[in-house]
Length: 167
Image (spheres, rainbow, N blue to C red):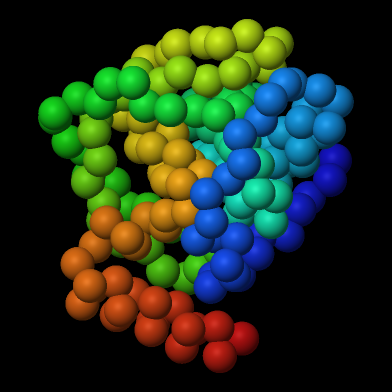
């Protein structure tokens, strides 16, 4: 088990688009394994490679009640998003100590390269859908707080910075 350190905001890698993955090889499988270990240790329901400083389009998601159901995704993209929204408190280990209520599509259909290296289309609903969208945002260089108004975003970041100075 290898735990990776989540890089702190405002590291520029968190604002850069991740590089697409051409094929699923042992290197990718190793990164995914580390990501699952890191996500489980947080504990969290998802992790994108840029969060650990790896600028590749890789994500893992596990919003199951019984852990160990992680979906490994390379190059995920939303093909369809429901118009119905779902609000959920979101956070990030890259900006610890703060969270915000974010509205996202309640259900999404996503296409990605799976662990076998084949293209898969899968529907995600509820917390699974929220986490998948959150990870895809990371792969595009976006953070969850980018969905907030500029005033709320500044307050959230200021609160996180204040918490970091206390540590």
